[in-house]
Length: 361
Ligand code: FNR
Image 1 (cartoon, rainbow, N blue to C red):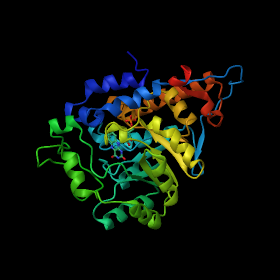
Image 2: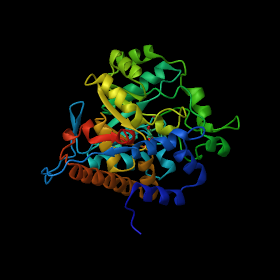
Image 3: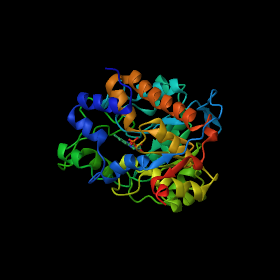
Image 4: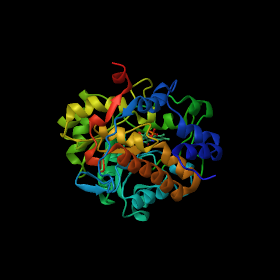
């Protein structure tokens, strides 16, 4: 049977992946309350379509930092793509290139910054950073991304330590021996304390003491614009403006960090209202179909990113699978533009979306 939705890809990937990898990819933290919320919060929003507008010509194009993209749907940074498919991050990057959209490479990738740049030179790439305890190492990561023609640094701020993903603890998650975290000298992930190997690695490598001063430090020496990923409040969004960041990604890390925080789509309105045009607001979390993309744009996102849906596509059929997932969501988004009476991305505004509780008033 052909696969016609992200959900079809998810089910197929569930059948294909070994348990430790599936659990690593799909888990949220703790009781996974926010994981569920990331999905249901979209269902609570209703689209208010307008009819009898000429929608025969449509455009899904968008502009971010002066660059034009074919679709406002990019690829979020997710760790270790080669657990899903041998072609790993290269396959995902090339799929993004075909769609004329952004690929964000994770610090915890199984293909290096340089190798992705070499094999997918033309994709528009951003590099996701965690600040290591060793600041020179951190600086060298940024310099490597600059040299390799990445166009922005995405600093993830919601992960001073990693959240507790119970399945990873149960599985004593570690990276299979033939795979490596290619951006680091210490490449393997093993667990030596009987818990999740990734949490142990992060605790050793990354700096839990970082503050806004470190953001200033990064903005000060990076030649690339800095985007903060993981913002969930207007207060932090305004601090991002103050510290010279050019963008934020409203995100709860795919519900893998602090459990019971708001769904990203719930946090988005207060943030976009507070910062206006002072920086570029983007979001990720729970997007599985075109109407979700529409709602996020209506509530203030310029661009959205897919995390798990890309991993499902990659698992099922490498680059082809990622391309197909992007094709499905992009086609659904284009269909939404037509049916909501908004032929271009710029036509979408907050009047097109209403929360379910507003209907009962
Ligand atoms: C992530 N995410 C993530 N974020 C980040 O900044 N660096 C990383 O290395 C990772 N790794 C990672 C692995 C896996 C398996 C998942 C599912 C997520 C978070 C990611 O960038 C994004 O915020 C969420 O995945 C978006 O939610 P959805 O699309 O998965 O619902």
